[in-house]
Length: 112
Length: 116
Image (tube, rainbow over all chains, first blue to last red):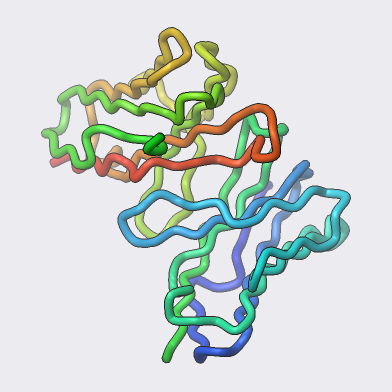
């Protein structure tokens, strides 16, 4: 069966440390993988997109990797800040923007 | 441009009633999506429009659900004979098909539905 999982429901880290979030999937072959941030009571906000032929993407303090053999993406936030506290969602682009599957999300708390 | 807007933000209804939600996408975006999100879960894809054509529908979308996008502009999602299990956040997103931001979804703030 098809499944998409994110490493844990909640992750607590100390300010200044690197947060690493995991997205694993089975029985999917996505063309792209995206990461979104969602704050309580708001819609998700796009952060990064990585293509199946790309290994790594960076944007400021954010880095995402994509391993299609392991069927896994890792999302890193370096020098984390309390303002980074939110739920982070990975999303598989199944058909070039026509159909997306979202993971359940990981709620990140950065403690001061 | 103010982004994707959804109306209403909150809707409380009694079981068995019909409800309709509206989504106004970003004006130059020709792709529009509807999702449902329950507490602690990620958004679940419901349906997708390219311009006015509804090209994808999830199996989650029972015959009580219908979506339209007349003239390829705003979209409506109607739920007939609501059930308590329909209580959720309904999210709309839009996306361009070209340019450097194609396939990136821009979400509205959602409509929270409570069925009593």
